[in-house]
Structures are given as structure tokens and as C-alpha cells.
Image (cartoon, rainbow, N blue to C red; front, side, top):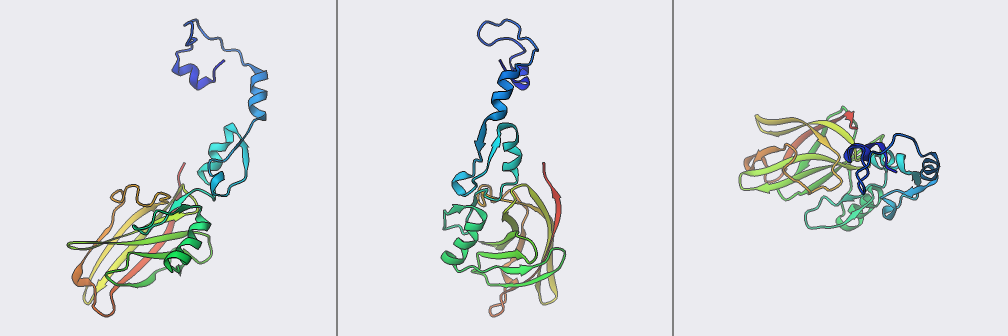
Length: 214
């Protein structure tokens, strides 16, 4: 017995004796498989739902308990979206700045700011503005860290200093493993002179939904 995709992989021949495999459905085995319930892979992070094998993957693509890693580079914490929000507040004293999709949000950050949290006012979506210090200045990008692991968003980010401005228009994906590939997404490179010694760096950020990924 083999499923249709496995039959293609083995060229419709038995892997033991190489005889051709028939095309008759084995309905008793189908009934057994339909009755089996499997736990979500995010059970250890709080998801208590169970599903038939053939629908579990669809659930896991949008599971609210998908693990997210802490965006602070010195922290190795991994937990569900809701637990991560509590962790950021209790361990890092990081309270989110609230914004609305399709509207500009003004931010001030200093050169030592590593992370700024952005929470959508009407929806349960959390973004991180990451400031990475480099020799030339700062690399700034926005990423979504929860709760949906298959959502895409677009954003504009603009840095202003006196009569000068720098702007980046790009898209961001949900990044459960926040530092798995820090160079994967585009970023805004801001020279050090854009940072005012007293006021810091003035930023304008606008985020909107782009599309849902398969």
C-alpha cells in the first residue's frame, strides 16, 4: 500500500519486489487514516487542537501558537506570539507603539535603540523595527513576528535630518525565527549624522497588508 505521491516516487513499483503496484484504493486503510487525529506541532507552545493528518498542515500554516523568537540579539527566548509579548514586556521593558495600517506613524529612536515594537491598534499583529549599528551608521528594517507565520506586508520607512531624507519602500514577511537570516530582507542604511545628539533619529513608518502566502 502506498499513497499516490509515493507511488510516483517509486515509479508505481513495489520497493521490495519491484512488481507493479495496482491502482485500486484500499478503503479500509483510508478509513483508519481518516480516524487518526494528530496533535499540532505547536502543542508545546500551547496549541491543544488535534486534526486529521491531511488537514494538520493547513492549520499549522496559520496556527496562533507558532513559535516566535525574541528580537533582542542577546536573548534566546522562543515562545508563542502571546507569550512573546509578555516576555518582551517583563524581561526587556519593551512596550509597543500603537499604529494603524495604511497610516504614517512617527518614531524617535537613539543610536543605542536596538528594537522598537509596533502593535496594530485594531488587529492582533506585532511588528519589530530593528536598528543594527554598523560602521557607516545604522541598518533599519521592519519585520512582523506574529502571530500569523504566512502573512506578507508592505511598508515605507523614511529617515529625516534637517533638509535631508532617506526612504525605503519594500515588503516584509512574518519572521518567527527572527535572526535566522538577518540579511534576507532589505533595510534602510542611515548615516550616523542623521542621529541628533538630543532628539535621536526621526522616522516615519507606514505599514499595510500586502497579501496572504500559500
